[in-house]
Length: 427
Image (cartoon, rainbow, N blue to C red; front, side, top):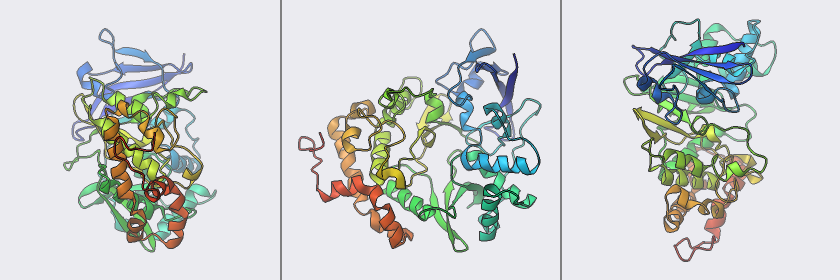
C-alpha cells in the first residue's frame, strides 16, 4: 500500500535540531506516526494525542478532514499556497496534489517549533530573517500581486526570496517576515481590491482589543510609500531566537466532517469546546475560559466572523503546560451583516448575539453575573470605536462601510441595556 511521508523535526533550539519522528498517509486515508526519539521528547507535539504507544514506535491514527492531523498548522494555505503553486508553475513543476505534498513544501519559517521535510532531507535549514521593512516598496508589492493573480508574470529571484518565508504562515492575507526592532515580525499587506483599508482596520481593532483587556502581540501601523501595512511581533519566538511550540485550536480539536445538524457547533467545535479542552487536567490551562469568553464577545461586537479554529491557538513554553496565545487576526468583516461566527458561540450554535454568548457561560467557568460583567466591559470599550478608527487613519467612507459590523455593540450602547446581574434584559 503506497504511503507518502514527511520527517518531523524539533527546532526549539536552532543550533540543536532533533529528528523526532515521521508522519505518513496511506492511500486509504490512514495516517502513521513513527517515533525516532524518546516518548517524553515527542509528547510535546500534541498533548491531547498519545502520539506513540508505550509498546511500539508506530501508531496508526485517523487524520482530520484535511488529512494531516496535528501537523495541519505547518502546511502552506491561503495566499501562501497560491504563491507557491504559481512559483512551481513558472518552474514547470506540478503543484502539490495531497496534504503530505503540501507539508513537504513548507519551509522553516512556519509557526511554532516543529518543522517537516521530505524524508530524503537530513535536516531543515533554519535561516535567519535578514529582510527589513525598507526592502519593500509599492512597485514590489504590485509585482507580487500580479505574479500570483495573472498568468505569464515573472518575479525575480531576489523578490521571491523576500516573499517566500511569509508563505508558511497561512491565512488569506499576503504577508512577509522581517526583522524589526531586533526581533522577528510579520508584516501584513493590503490588497488592491480590498473594500476598505484592511491594515488600518486591523490596527484599530487590535487597539480596541487591548483596551478591552484582551492579550494581543505588539503591533504597529507603518507606511510603504502611500500604502499602509501592519507589523505584528511573532509570539512563537523568544528574544534569543528559540522557537515556542504552537498549536491552533483546529489541531487541538481535530475536526472531522461537521454533522449535518450542526450540533458540533454547539458542543465541540466552539469557543466553549476549546475552553473545555484547555481546562482538562493534563494541559495546565484552567484559566482559559474567561479570556476566551471575552474574545468571543469582542469578536461578536466588532463583526469579526473570521474567527475559525485556525485563528485561535495555544503555546507550550514548558513541557505539558499550555497557555492561550495572544489574540490575532482581529478585523471587522463586511460579511458580518448577514453571516454568523465561524465556530460555535452557545446554545444557538454560531449565532452572533450576546444572548447566545451568555447561554453557555458556565462552560467558560463563569457565573452568569461574571459573564454579564465582561459583556459590559467590552461594550463600554467599543462605545468609542469610531474615534479609535479615526485616530488610526480610517476614512469617512471606510467608517460608513464598517458601521454595520459594529451593529451589536452600537445597539447595546444605543438602548443603554442594563447589564447588572438580576436586571439583565438579555435573557
